[in-house]
Length: 304
Image (cartoon, rainbow, N blue to C red; front, side, top):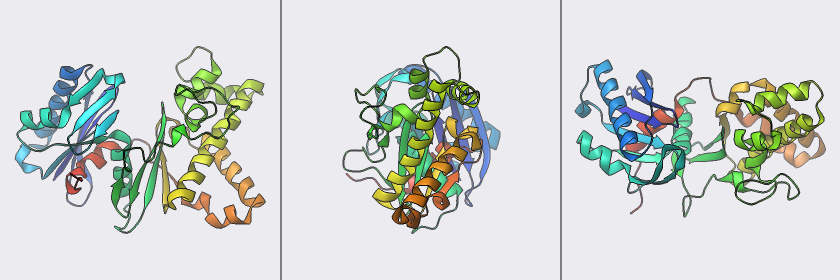
């Protein structure tokens, strides 16, 4: 068996994965804030999973962790996970010392990409991208069955690609980047009105004909479609799996995205030849892909 842990901003999920890739048990606990609290809640989640399965740490062949922030996968060090109160933390070493075994650590989007690859049962020679539409926007790449991080870990950070230099200002100081038009936080800043779910509010207002909401919705559809096109044109992946909180809105978002892609395909024989719409898959609701991917990290070798 393998164990995967997904440390999120509010919840930490631990899963036990059988040899056939199925999740046999999972537990969720609240995530702590700050270095010691994050470690404590992670250990508590592992302990709860061990109790639920009647196993010991030694019964698991691999233990992996997915976490937001900049992650040095070789050392297990996490940096700039600000929503967790972490500036620098040697998470792999700390958890490994307390559990008495090796613990692999990876960025949560990369872990989710690996989890989606296994969830969709892709062959070892296949390539896939996981596009996360959540508070932010980023992609993870699995090329021929292996995570691709790039020379400095920047592979998949497509949220910083500009698609409209005259568009809204993003937190990175650029106008019209993909993240500001397709992420929850970017849409909330564009909308500028109180409420817990800006994306749903914008879609509702657009359905009622609000001009400002219509502009934001158009940019959302075009931004997601552009993200898919960029991933296909740069690495020609077999599939683009879309997940994250915004993906949970289903056809309210994806229907518009497919319309944009259909328009492009009608205008350009080359874009039509790419079959963009046929490559898109929506992540099943509630699928624990980050934890599932983390469970498979032990089978990956890291460059020294």
